[in-house]
Length: 188
Image 1 (cartoon, helix red, strand yellow):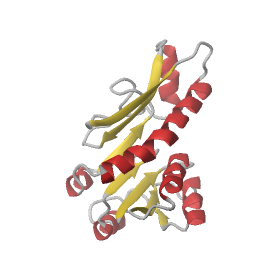
Image 2 (cartoon, helix red, strand yellow; image 1 turned 90 degrees about the horizontal axis):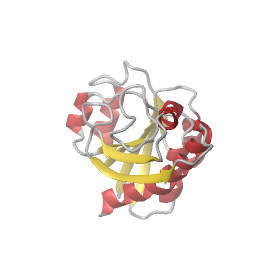
Image 3 (cartoon, rainbow, N blue to C red; image 1 turned 180 degrees about the horizontal axis):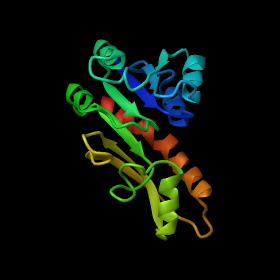
Image 4 (tube, rainbow, N blue to C red; image 1 turned 45 degrees about the vertical axis):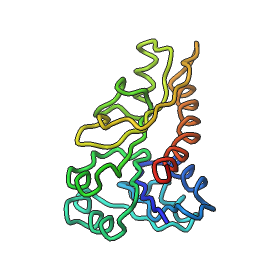
């Protein structure tokens, strides 16, 4: 059985898409959901799905802290950052090489890096009059949004789009493609 650990900071719609996709799987499960926010709705989603979950602070995220110890004991096959906003420490990248992936709401290398997340990305895409946007699923390395790309999926930027309408289409791409990409990574 392949096991996935999800890190999320917010509502957890991508975590929910992953939970739904693998709910009846015989070879893949979500074993843990972690959040850096105590009141993140993703923790409620985990509870409803019967998945262990916990929130943590920066101290717990440090080397040899509870999060590190928990990950080492679980030995996940894949760690998925699904709307997780903190930078992953180097020791985790070293301990889990090519096992940590991130979902970014743009076609990297455009609109990536520190501070480029959520609605800020869509505002930048529209401000620069891009004709396409999309998502990038990539491995995590020591720099924000610089790891090797696994997959990219695009959509048109429509005339009259607002950051919210563009975000809606980006979320559809995320929910459609992230779980299937995870399955391909884990099972070829």
